[in-house]
Image 1 (cartoon, protein in one colour):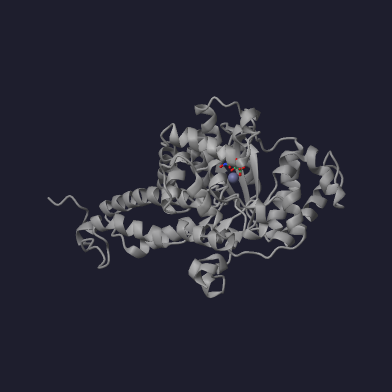
Image 2: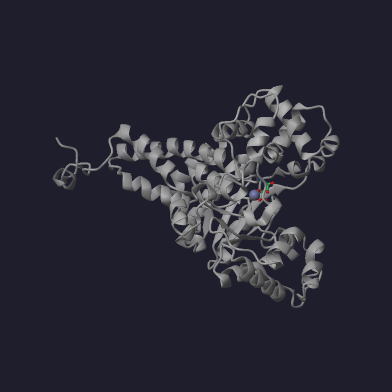
Length: 452
Ligand code: HDL
Ligand code: ZN
C-alpha cells in the first residue's frame, strides 16, 4: 500500500533541474564562487593612502599587532614596561625572535604572519627580518594597497574614523580626496563612552554643549554629526560599548544615544553599528592589548531594536556566550544585522560555531565576517581563513539541502555569497556600486602604478 498521500503520488518526481550540481561538484563550485567574488570588509582600522602615517603597513607593524604583543608577553620574560621603551623595529625583532624563532607559530595570529610571508614569497624561517624589511621598504603605498586588496579578494573596506582624534581631525579639516575602496565610518566612542573627557572639544569648536549634556547639547551634537556627515560621507556610524551596557538607563550615554545619535542616523539614513562586550583595560600594562571580554545583557539590544524600528542596527558582540541569543534577536527584529566573528572570536574553532548557527537560524541574511584589520596586509590572511571556512560550511549546507530534495545551481551559490559578503551591507548602507569591484575601478582610471 503506497503510504504517500494522493497528492504526493500525483506530483511528478522531483527531477533535479538540468543545471543542478551533483553532490561532488558542490564544494569546488562554492570554493570558486567565494574566490572570484570580491568582498566588502565591513569593519577595519585601515586608512586610505591619503591618511599617510595613520595607515599602518609592512612587517614591523604586522609583528607589533596587539594580538601578537599579548602572546609575546606570555612567552617572554621582558616586562611590558621595558618593551614599550623599545623602538618599533626592536619590538618587532623581539616578537619575531620569541614567537617565531624560539617557539613554533601555531597560534591564529602567528600563523597569519606566516601566511602573509608566503603570500609575498618571503622566507618564513629567517633568523631575522632583513629580507622582509627590504621588500616592504621597496613598496609604494598607493600601488601596494591596491595589490593587497586584490590579493585579499576585497573590493572595499570600511575604515574607522574618529572626528575627535586630533591627528585625523586635521586631515579631514584640510580636505581629503575620497578613495572609493576606503569608505569612511563615523566612530563615536569618545562622545558616547567618555563625554566627560571630550565635551569641551565640541564646545571649543562652537557647539553649545555642556558636561551634563543638558540644554541644547543633544541638538548641538546632532549638528556636529551632520557637519561630519557632510565632511566624511560615512557609510554608517559606530560605537564600541562595554559588557555592562544597559538600555534604557539614566546615563549621559543613553541620553546622547537616544536623543542625538539614533535620531541623526534615522535622519541621515545611516545604520548604527553597536560593538558590544569589551571590558576595557583589564591589564593597562599591556596598552592596546589590555582589553578583555564580558558577557552582555542583550536585553539592551532588544529594547533598542524595539524602541527604534525606523533605525538599522549593525551589531557584533564580543562574548561567545552572547552569539546564539544574537541570532534569536535577529530573528525577532529585521532592523538588526549581525556581523562578524569579532576579535577574540576570530579563530577557526569559534568562527565555525558562530557561522553554522547563523546559517541554520538566519539563512543568508547576515554578514559572516569582517577583518578588523589594523595593518593593511592582515586582510590577506584574515580573508583567506574566512574563504576556507565558508567553503566548508556553505558546501555542507548545500549538501544538506540537496539531500532534503532541492537541486543546487551555481547561480544559487553566487546569489548567496554575494548577499553574505556584499549586498546585505550595500543594501543596509546604501553603498552605491562604485565600490563594487577592482576591475570596475581600473576602468574608472583607478589603476595602480603597477599597471601603467
Ligand atoms: O573597538 C574596536 O573596533 C575593536 O576592534 C578594537 O579596535 C580592538 O582593539 C581590535 O582591534 N580588535 O580586533
Ligand atoms: Zn575594530
